[in-house]
Image (cartoon, rainbow, N blue to C red; front, side, top):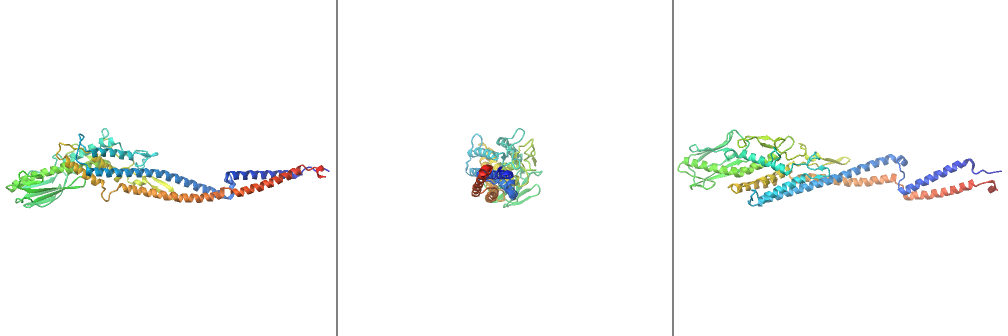
Length: 499
């Protein structure tokens, strides 16, 4: 009798040993990697849930990257806007404190500093954050503005701000230097002042006139408007009459003439004559002188402000505007500047929609933030225009009206930089960007909390419990060792060992 090993059961035993060895290898891998399986198929019925959780975690990672990137951009925008506001405030203070002390260039030190500060503003607006210019609207690959030199001095045949101001000044002053007003010689006892014919958008406009003892005052009335002063008797010394005028920049100015018996009269006075006709002649001369001085000071300053607005107020469908000339001193209207003859200072994207909507980023499944900006927004544009007009104006020591014009210009620039109610402020843009930053911060906090929750759920599906795997390995090793010993004994079994 012979015993031939384990017989037909040997293949089953070997297979069982192989399966246990494979299980042991998989458990050792789980212990080493901490993962139940290297494929989703190995997760069984939870594989669909794991895929979904992974997708959500990937989306959260993408949102986090977006928040980081947009956070950098909005921080740069806030810093730029803060600096622009600071420069505007500094120039405003300078216009209120700078004494009229010009050098050979015809400018004060504060004006020269304003040009350097304007250059800094343009540099800030044209500084990219990564691959995007932040103040060009949707044209993120294009700088927001032209260069300082082109803006102020022009580019070849294209007129810059200085030329636009000079042309507008000629148009506002007119050929007679009286601000497009006519003050003919007295006709007997009648003195008149009227706006030019044909009507024009330039120069001073008659707004109102007060009464005067001994005279009949009419107007302003008619088109073009006119005022008449007819002397029926001589006024008394000290009697006054006041004229109000509307200026091109939307401001108002006034002149007042006081009757006097002195000859010659002082500035702002007219001499009472022996006859009313003499009084009318004297009044006409004093009125012409007063209007001429007002034109050379207040009107010239207002003209520069209006020209700067014509030049800088550009947008979709709104090109820079300039005087329709030459001749400029007889022009009656403005005309649109073209790409061939006028510099367009803003080179970014122009649109009629809200600037913030030109750059939108998704920061959550159902949440997006708008952080776009355009350099030609009212608050930014106005700051640039006012600093520019202050920085390019020049004065002459030989001009008796230079100091008064400098003062008038400074007052207008300071008032404009104070930002009247109803106009956009730099702080308004900053507040809108701050809202976007706050929204992103809230979204980031929510996503971090969601991420922790999803990672816990995913860990429960994909991760192998270390203690449980270690226990299974120990149990399997014990079983495998026992099986191997038993199999070894069975394979060594013979009739000799059996007996």
